[in-house]
Image (cartoon, rainbow, N blue to C red; front, side):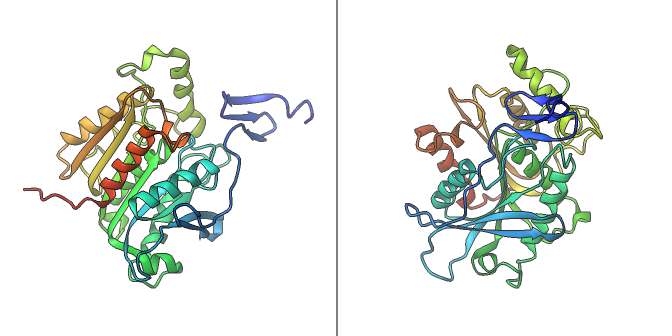
Amino acid sequence: MNSSEEEIATEIPGVIRVYKDGSVQRLIETDIVPPTTDPKTGVSSKDVTVIPEFNVSARLFLPKLANPTQKLPLLVYFYGGAFCVSSPFTRKYNSYLTALVAEANVIAVAVNYRKAPEHPIPTAYEDSRDALQWVVSHRKGDGPEPWLNHHANFERVFMGGESAGANVAHNLAIVAGSPDFGLNLELLGVALVHPYFWGSSPMGSETSNPSRKAIVDRLWPFLCPSNPDNDDPRVNPLAEDGPGLVGLGCRRVLVCVAQKDILKDRGWAYYESLGRSGWMGVVEIMETEGEDHGFHLYDLESEKAQDLIRRLSAFYNRDMPLIF
């Protein structure tokens, strides 16, 4: 690395470093594991290209089938990583999705949207929207991917994600609620795990950790230079000039938060605001005591991680209650 490359323009400590010559160094989660069949659970995975013109891909996960014609709930999943690191192909997410698919007995499509800063916001949303449309193209059983044609139950479609991926899932649910989107499919539910929501005015306990708050304050301007405002409705869904929550395009929402997570209070505020917004659905929340952001991704065998996976499994498999 020459001297010009060593000059740092921007850095999110411990996550990503951008040099003045435009080169990018990702400091975490750069590993890739191949798709396979997991010997412990029988879950199979494979990689597919979903948007060829932009080389956007996804990893599909299929649980061990009770019979070859079995139809399963379908989860469209968005990974976390602050919109700028990681992918569904890392060991962390591959292992987590394998465990979740085995427990919930769902088929999952984990979308590898393109990352900032090379592809700033709104690229992640656009890639994810197009990937969702690709998934829906299998609704009549004649799409390009046999696993979806043969095994996906398009009457039980969910979206979910962690952190930035939960943010994507929320924003896609808002878009899906608009008739102009033309999704031609009713989403049954959305599960938001430790969602990345933020805002310019401090909330709850956010000020108790000034250094961590400062990092989160810098994140959205780094990701979205075209609108570097932490009250952009895409990152602050409760912003006064946003579309609100009443038009959320699904019937159920689960919000999962962690007690020590600086984003926890935003998750609670989202849950409470959705419940009183006039949205005609059912929202529930789960808080894990004593844990921090994304804890479950690093210790899948822990009891608290298992509790979270079981709660998600129940959410994906529960029948919709009647609403009068």
